[in-house]
Image (cartoon, rainbow, N blue to C red; front, side, top):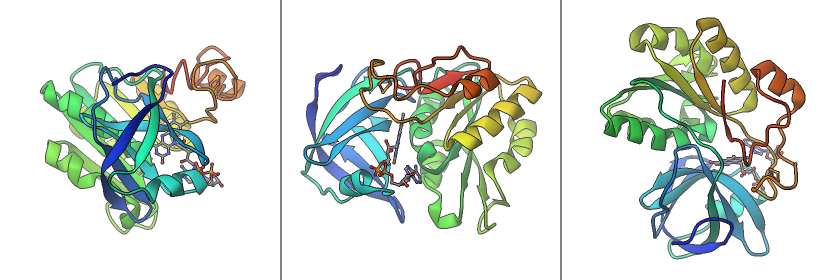
Length: 250
Ligand SMILES: Cc1cc2nc3c(=O)[nH]c(=O)nc-3n(C[C@H](O)[C@H](O)[C@H](O)COP(=O)(O)OP(=O)(O)OC[C@H]3O[C@@H](n4cnc5c(N)ncnc54)[C@H](O)[C@@H]3O)c2cc1C
Ligand code: FES
């Protein structure tokens, strides 16, 4: 399989249902040399092209929430249908230490499952905190548990786990796991809250941000992290999510 800027046609081998709006598209071939947290650009001719975090490498998989026209088209695909893929792109997560706390909101759980697998293969301790609006919006819970990760859940309506935001379970996880590094993927407001909490705890953190990605190779500037966010995170202004990220180490 070819990587870099060229499209490779992959076919869907399986479309696994994760929750009421999310499907994991498992393709018919692997993608080599992936760092968890990197992303691919998925193209459907006549429909568009968008970035998706890599949720599996052997074979390649992406996990897609149906929230708009492009993601809807992807989630309607069936076994055997082609998707044109280029990548892997960006800078992903890098395991640091041996006790890891992974925090996911929404489909942010997807890249974390690949990171968890890599850490478990090394014999490390992995705890995963997942948050969603309600129980049926959570995803990959059983997959993390099967891997042997300790799982903490939070739902905004209290239907399962702690009632409230995922940040509400962190104190317990800090005490029980004593993590050396926190890794997170999810909505940007969640990431900013985590940046503040980890600064107070003096805990190294790696945060995977989202932005409007067009070229995917650092040329068009559409994915630049706002200067105010860079200053809050203590990173240099002009950070390009597609090329310098999506993972920001703070
Ligand atoms: C680095 C990176 C990794 C990404 N990884 C994934 C991934 O693993 N899985 C995935 O599903 N998407 C992922 N995305 C988002 C994806 O690229 C698209 O933006 C998303 O699928 C929406 O595209 P759309 O054309 O379907 O909807 P759009 O037409 O762009 O949006 C439709 C509506 O949905 C809203 N919306 C957009 N995104 C979300 C969201 N996440 N939740 C709720 N509402 C939303 C928009 O504000 C808009 O109102 C990633 C984005 C980036 C930058
Ligand atoms: S998407 Fe073009 S510079 Fe990042």
